[in-house]
Image (tube, rainbow, N blue to C red; front, side, top):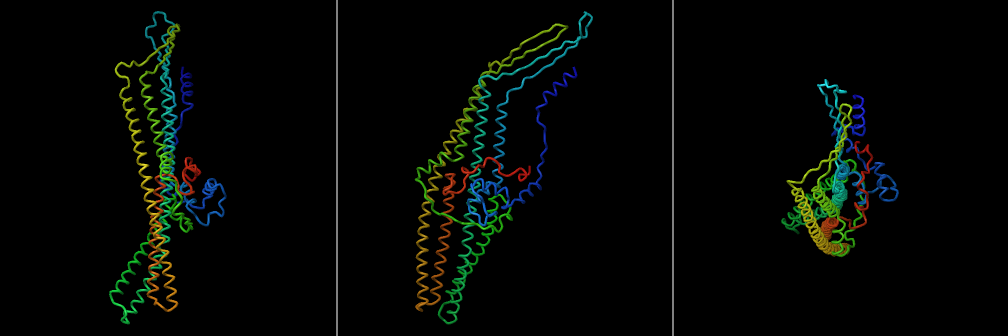
Length: 470
């Protein structure tokens, strides 16, 4: 008997999982993050796989938005979190597909009265309880789990888009900060020259003290702006590294290639709305959620029909072999699962309402972003025209100065107006780029041919296990 029980336990436990401790060590994970670099050979393989070309030299001499976007897809921890959530949903499919296990009952009996000439004081009883699901419940569970997994998988694309959008925003910020510093430095130089000229005129009686004071104040304000621009430039470098998912040191000293197209050609507003309503990952994920809600409702309706339990048994009693076949079923006398069915119907209605609301919000986002973007493009065209006029005036002032028909103060004043126009144009361009990013966010697709989640496999973690601390 002991041998039989031992064999039975061994057989039942043969396929059991074994717990493997995996403690979370903050120092080890921090060290793994700090070891990330932009000359990683594994990163090079990932870039070449998605660029469909060799990356030579390595590391690249300059990094454009395309390369930086792929780098963010390789390193950013938000994508690791989204993949882990999908992994939980995938495990849910295993749970949904499991069939209920049968149960085994062994009930030996010992008879204290053996005076009647019984063959043995023991009676051995064995019973099986085999549950049988009805009405396709397991299929509905699997369907629901599959749709929830699809929603989690689509959410990875949504997270990847947010990673890209955040990186693009930091990229544009860095571009503006990089361009504004030399412009402000030139403005400081010009204003310093103007102050010097006015002070000389004041000494000669050709200028008033208020004019000199105003020029000095304008110079100090510009110097403060320059100091702020330098601070913003340092912060922009750090923010770019954070958007890449690497430490600041990894991005120090890299050369950024700012090849920016401010106004790529766009389809009509109707086409843009259609693209957003059919391609956005959050819309597709919510569609999967709705299908999961439908499967959940069908499962609750199926639960109205009770499952069947078969109970075959055997009993050895005093040399007599007794066989039995039990049958049990839950009688739906007091309820027909009305509560869970009502809850499932309400959840389906809620999901449908959220989907309709999301569509309306997406249409509003696209229309608002497109209107703002087009308006700023018109503003940029005006800024370009003003800058062109100031360039012409600057050239004319230089010609007059060389001809001796005007003084240096007039020349420096024309230079100051040109620098101011250049700064205004840069600020307008920066607003245009951020408006374009807002339009891309509404569409969840890039306005130009750079890497987006739809063109890169972001579902599988590209980093090897040793880089992930596993």
